[in-house]
Length: 156
Image (cartoon, rainbow, N blue to C red; front, side, top):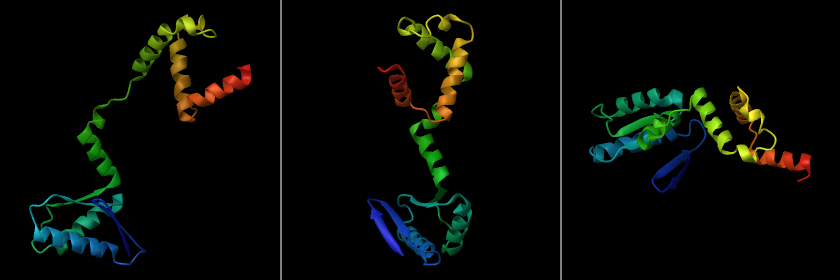
């Protein structure tokens, strides 16, 4: 078993059956018994192991309480952090909102759109552009790749 400490984060590494879980449980329960009102202790486990860890900790606890210990998974921790910093307040843009945004960008840049200047006035242009952008995002095409392809094809 190997223990790596990085500031207040500690990683405990080792093969299966080497006593990692038991060592963590014992250390956490000792810390809780010495200072029951201290700051929270976080145990991050795989998604499927959170209930097992909570059950093991509460059965080992002398009084059955583990109020200071927070057992969570990476997904749940990410959700809690997102809630705390306001990340979940950002709502995704609706399809209509995307069309409106693209329409605004097209209108603001109509003078510099040499190839699509006239087509941009046609009904459905912005919808097709939104679909094209979604497809490029889906396939991981970055703006730099488009720029490189344009330079190769036009010799710019």
